[in-house]
Structure formats: structure tokens, C-alpha cells
Amino acid sequence: MLSQAPLNADLHVVNAQVLYDGVVEAVRDVSFSVDAGRIVCLLGANGAGKSTLLKAISGILGPEKGALTKGSITFAGKGLTALSSDGIVRKGIVQVPEGRRLFVNLTVEENLLMGGFTVRAAERAVRLESVYSLFPDLTDHRHRVAGYLSGGQQQMVAIGRALMSSPSLLMLDEPSLGLAPKIVEQIFAAISSLRDSGDIAILLVEQNARLALTISDYGYVLERGRVVFDGDAATLLGSPEIQEFYLGLDQSAGRKSLRDVKHYRRRKRWLA
Image (tube, rainbow, N blue to C red):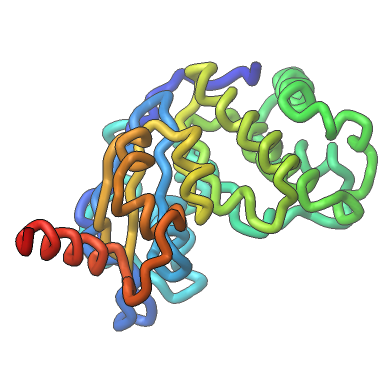
């Protein structure tokens, strides 16, 4: 198992508001927490604000003309909003972005070593072998150019590269996107094993609600930049609203959002 820094991974996002160009509100009054040694998932459709929240935590909103305009983000009891993106990484928070974004002209091993460039050589070698242990499929491809890998193998490299810095909090943005079901199963098994080791906390953004909730401890559902539902994973999986709208178990016409579903159910109970 990967050797990690001492874990102190409690993340708290409180009443966060994010604006783009100073006028477009992507996130409104969102609060959530990620406790040490747990997987927490953010669910919702495209445009719900999930990836924006990860960027706010990572401190990388600036290039997209976005900004956290209200609220606070703290990690291990310390505020993050005044830190640069590299300062946030040094605090133990690492994000694996949607689309993987590897150095496609470098080999697998060179990509992985880029993730541990601040670590001493001896420790870097230990972490490298730990990544290969977590993702055995990469072992035979360590000297292959990353751009020639399959999408699933590239996702494994992206996660492995993040783990090379020994994070306390790993943030994953749509790790299943565009991948074959068998590969997704392997990657999510690896994510679960990381959590089960007790060495890392994971914040997971994923559109596949059933898959995310299957491995998560707690979940938050976002719509139009707001949290509209939250609970432990088993509760969300068993929720009629979540099953109906997000898990596709009932395709009743005219339901535009989770709020519509909840209003419909309240009205049905009142009429009864």
C-alpha cells in the first residue's frame, strides 16, 4: 500500500459562492465536508457546479476568470483561500482533473515521476513501486509513451501521478468518463482500496451515481450550483427521489429536476 503522510484530512467548505467573470454564479451557498479516511461523492448533472467546487478547493479558478466570492474553505483547520495552487498541493490536496491531462510525449514512468518531483529519490522509488502495485496493468508499460496508452491506462497513470505526492486528500473528477465497464471496475476497486487503507481521504465527482454511491461513505447531490440532497451512501441509494431521478429507475415524464420530484412527492402525500 502507498506510503502516506500523517493523515489530517478534514476538509470543510462552508457557504461557498463561485462567480465567473464576476456575474455568472456557478456555485451558490454550498457547504460540505470530507472527513479523514472517507470517500465523499458529489453528484449531479453537467453544469451543477461539481467541477467548479474542485477547482475552488485546488485554487485554480483564476485562469477561467472564476473566484470564490463568499464562504470559506478549510483543510486540517487551516484556511485555503489565500494560498496559491502549489501551496494547496503542499498542504496535501491533489486533484486528478477530468480528461487526465497527461504529458503525452513522456513515458508512463516519467509522468509518474513528475508527480513526485519534490520528494527525495529514495522515497520516490518506494512510491513508484506502490503505484505499480495498485495498478499492475501499468507495470509492463512503464517505458511506453503515455499518449499511446488506452484511456483506462491513462486514467491509472493520472491517479498514480497524483498519489506520488503522498496526498492526504485526493480529488477525482469524473474518473469513469469514457471508459469501458471492466476498466472502470478496476479503477474503482483501486479507489476503494485506497480508502480502506485508512491513509487517504477522497472527494469524488462522478455522474454515474450508482457507481459512486457504491464505494462512497457519504454523498451530496448538486443542482444549479446548490446542494439539494445529502446523506450517507446507503440512504441515498435507497432514496425514492435519487432512484427516480438519478438512477433512472422511473422515467416519468415532466420531471425536470430533483426539486420537481420532491415537490411532486410532497403534493402526492398531501392529496392522499
